[in-house]
Structures are given as structure tokens and as C-alpha cells.
Length: 385
Ligand code: PMP
Ligand code: GLN
Image 1 (cartoon, helix red, strand yellow):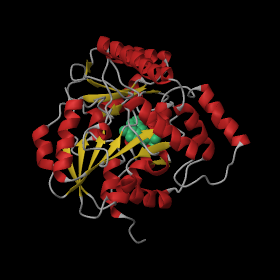
Image 2 (image 1 turned 180 degrees about the vertical axis):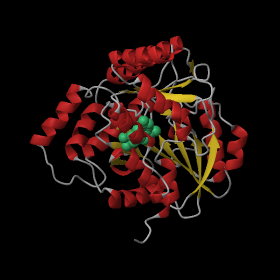
Image 3 (image 1 turned 90 degrees about the vertical axis):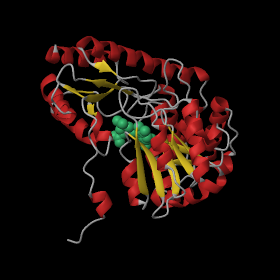
Image 4 (image 1 turned 180 degrees about the horizontal axis):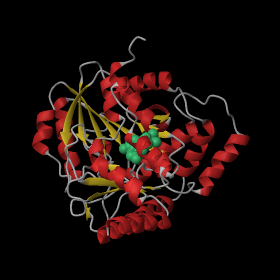
């Protein structure tokens, strides 16, 4: 057989799938892959069901239903004061994953440099490389995830085409501050680059941490492509509805990639997402508050067992150091042991780095029912205590 594409073939199955399969196989409580328990807000799900039976099920417009694009624009104005022309500056995508791929395929020319901040969400690097981009990796690290400003200064050159920025950041739980974003904006302008802004956790921030979309900062309006996800905002990760906001000049090439990747996204889910985005502020505030309660519940339990907790200002994820509990075990092996013997699955933090030399930390997902979190903590306590 002739060889398949070498970039994609060089990757194994994603760690989220691997750990979820292992959890199922061993009947473990799955705090690995990031998906909420439950079935999302009932009214949003019902809106999808009604649209399925009562509205059109044929191809919607390639850029997305006008109703949804209008709501995406209104949402940007309501939460960030951003003026968006829905007819020229919004595309609906099949999840944030497709939005990311469309941006990268649409904008990267082979040889272009792309700055990325590790630890990385799994799809970034394979798609950058498949598009012919040359990754320039900069790391944030435990215990404080502070921004390595000198490394970033060095990573940006005249060859930099893009920065791929994720805030609130998976897996770290870091919410970039305005000051950090202003620093990045300066580097982006200096290199005359664009920024793909993965903001899927925009409404999941805690303790007063403010999510600032980079696109709202001076000089950034025409350089940023801002990505949101109904999966995260409505706790419906299986829906794979995303939305992309950028200047018409940037969206043009990205829509070329979108039309050949998926062309469009199921219309009933678009209708329901439009309904969801029109909900009162209370819905969005409660989402963050609810997740904060869950973070605190899991954090208290893990701290009681002896894990060292890392800061977490947003997302679904809490990272914890285990050196005080199991000194010499590497994190991948420890995740296997915990799944098989304690009955709890987490994700090894090293899986998000290219060079897996950040040892001794696990990523736990806390967007679960209280009873599930309590069960996980008591199983871990039983095994490690
Ligand atoms: N980016 C990040 C940082 C994520 O955590 C996720 C969640 N899986 C995605 C993108 C993908 O989102 P979607 O399910 O909408 O494709
Ligand atoms: N975003 C999820 C996580 O980080 C997983 C998404 C996926 O499985 N592709 O756990």
C-alpha cells in the first residue's frame, strides 16, 4: 500500500478518546475528557427538536442561518461591546474544531510561521502542520502558568503569520489578563500577523477573572478571528456548532476552506443555538457560577487527599500535582493506575506538551454532577489515603 499523509499518520489516537475508552472498559469515573454530565438546558434542546420537525432540513446557507449569525453579532455587542456586521463578519461552523481548521487552512501558506502556546489543545498542531505552517512553540508551565515574555518576543519574527491563542485556556485553566493580552497584541502588530482566538470557554470564568477577547483591544479588530462554541456555552458538546467572527477580509479566505470542509452545519442545531444565544444574561452568569461551585467541590476533595492544586480561573479543568502522593510514577502511568485500581480517570498533563517533560500533574474535568465528583474523590481517597 502506498503511504498515507505523513503528517496525520504520525499522530496516534487523541488522548481524550484513549482515556475515555479506558474509563469505559474499566467502569471508572471519567474525569478525563471534557464533557458535562446531563443533557444541556431543556429549552435549548427543545428548540432543536421543534426545529427538526417544523423547519427546513435541507442545506442551510453556507455561512450559516441569518438568525444565528445575527445572534452571534448581538452576543458580541452585549458581552464585549463589539460591533459586528452579521452579514459579512460571521460564519457558523461545525464546532470550534472546524472553525480552527478553516482558519488555519484558509490563512496559512506553506512555510508561514505560527506561534502557539503550550500546553496545547490536541487539534492545533496537526492542522497547523498539515496546512504547511511552521510551528513556533512557547511554553507556560506549572505551578503558575506565567507568560514567558522573553520567549514570546523571540518567537515572533517577520515570518510570523499567525498566533493561535486559547483563553480561557485548556488544559491550564488560565485566563489571560488584559495586560498579558496587550503584550501579545504588541508582538502581533510588530510582526504584522493575525490571531486565531479560541474562546470556547468565554463564559466559564471564576473569582472575578474577566474574559477579554483579544479582538476588542486596540489595533486587533482586523487581525483577530474569534471562535465560540455552542458545545461549551450550552453544555452540549455533541452538537458541534461553532461560530467565527472576523473582518470580512479575513473571513473571505476562511470561508473558502469552510465550503470544502463541511460547507454547512445542521439547521435545527443552528436554530437552537440562535435561541440559546438570545437567553438573558442570567443564563450565562449561572453557567460560570455553577462551574465554579463544581471546581471548588473537586478542589476541596483533592486537596483533602493531598494533591497540590494549581490555579484555575476558568474552563472545565483543574490541574493537580501528585508528587506528595506518588513520587516517582510518570503521569501517563499514574492515570492508568488510577483508572484500573482507584476507578477514576484523569488526563496526564504531559499529553498537552510536545516534549512531555512536565511531570507530576493530572488534569481533572469538574463539569460533572456533584455525586460524580464526590464518588471520584472518595475512590481516590480510598486508594491513595
Ligand atoms: N478548543 C478548545 C480549547 C476546546 O477545549 C475544545 C473542546 N473540545 C474545542 C476547541 C472544540 O470545540 P467543539 O466541540 O465546538 O469543536
Ligand atoms: N475539549 C475536550 C477536552 O479537552 C475534548 C474534546 C475531544 O475529545 N476532542 O477534554
